[in-house]
Length: 226
Image 1: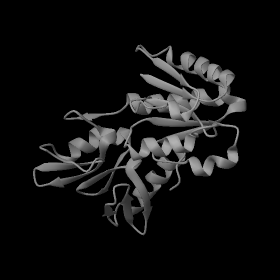
Image 2: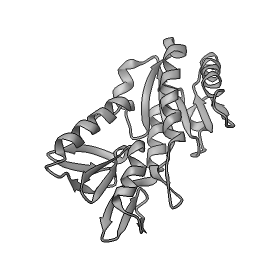
Image 3: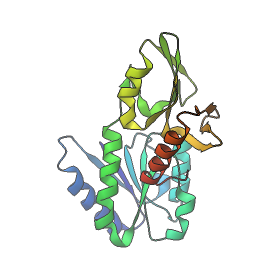
Image 4: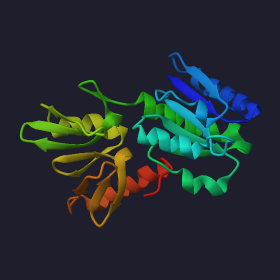
């Protein structure tokens, strides 16, 4: 597990590090915690969880978030801020929550536990990280995995089997032959799903109400706009 802490305040970095060590010590795995003073220092896209200050002197948290999103990084982001008025700008694909610096010891453990669950709960499909799958469509006896980098992967496995494996990591069935990764949804409206990659998918009328309800719950739990 690789956790990054990016904040220009040395005392705040130390406070966040103490919380991270306290939360992760119960997990039986090696955890690397690396601290950064500014967003420009973050060059490693393999950070699992990044606790990020919104406002920093050189490169701020929002710019870092956008850089990671553009690079299709799987880094899970938690924003720590004293500027609540800037939160609306900070929502994004990889952002799962916000904590207030004043209450960092109380709020961060809850959000960090959720981030750890996401990172530790990823599913591998034939070696493909489920976070890198945008959506899946069934094609006769095969399923076609559409990946976030534009590639496709044909897999001989039933849609039901994939649904059972992926429903715990944010995938939802929108019609009989299609699963979508809710992390990769741009928006849902008028019975359609708009994916980050530009694909538009139709929700079946039978599933529309339940799909919209589950997606709304997902957005609330992960601090995203629906």
